[in-house]
Length: 475
Image 1: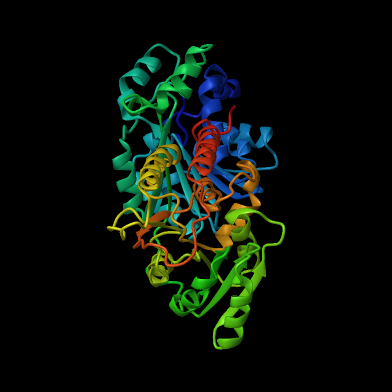
Image 2: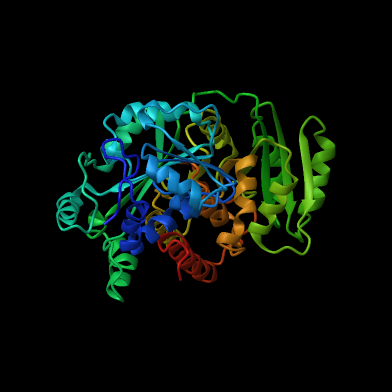
């Protein structure tokens, strides 16, 4: 089937054609690996591939600067000839020493060859920073007997030494190497291309509970462990989309707490007809001690457009959304800030479905829909989201700018603003964490949510997520 990289126990191969024949023979499987890594890795990044073999995977992710490392001299020699725009080094991963940092470190099926995985991970650590992502794919250990049989039958290169590791052991080794697991996933129930049958197995059955446990490829994405409180000097921009919320404006300003070095409040008014914009201007004059701004949404439609305009105008290091109806209390915002500041997460999502909510805060059908879509998107995204529609969400501005720059992958499809951020956070491998919040009934105005029309939009967005994430963008 597939071949292991980072060979430290194999003899050097003299026939370069032999190095490529396994990839050609198993092109369907290798095509899946390429697509998995191309989904995870942003093009034009700095990428290190340990166990790079002949360089195919490193070239596939289109790095601006790519370095491949392998102990097989013949493989490196061939890689240099095939991909002269990339950099290749002959080195034992256990003794790896480089004086540079990378955005991604790729470890594709190499773990099995390493005598001391923890030592290799410790060598990798100095090559990373807080934004680096470690991307590991490895065989499902349940496939051991199948792969051993494949080696015996000559359809897979024989191995002299191989570790068979379940995902829990890999996660533990990453933890010992001072890396935190962000998320996991699995792919490929049938690694051979058989017309229609492979599509059934790999695009349908492999996604279903009961079948997923047998998927051949396990994906683990990790980041460098972050020290608590390392970024205490952060400024915060609180974005408050509002439409016909005049009666909540003064209370919002009073209740939004100061956070970090400086806190600015940006109201984005969606052509209100009840005097909301005038009330904001009045409050700006009354409270010169607070940094408050008003932006008019203009011809834009929907909360999503308002959020994006507010984010674009923000000057803070950290961006957070606070709904103007105040049903999610502004007093909870410091919990979000502490979670982000202390490195517990990079995308902080509020959840209204943990604590008991006030009576009539959420209609029964809305509650059922929120629970349904929370479960659906948790499955689609491979990341637990108990409440996808809570308005309170926090992210660093630098991370949001990366999401915005790569928005074309999903398209400009989200009128709410929630899923643009959620999908983008998953695509950019941000560490997601949920913060429980209280949920209270409105005291002024009416909701702008239409249960059935917006419910249909959520189903359409679910289909987009399915194609782009579960099918890796393959229609």
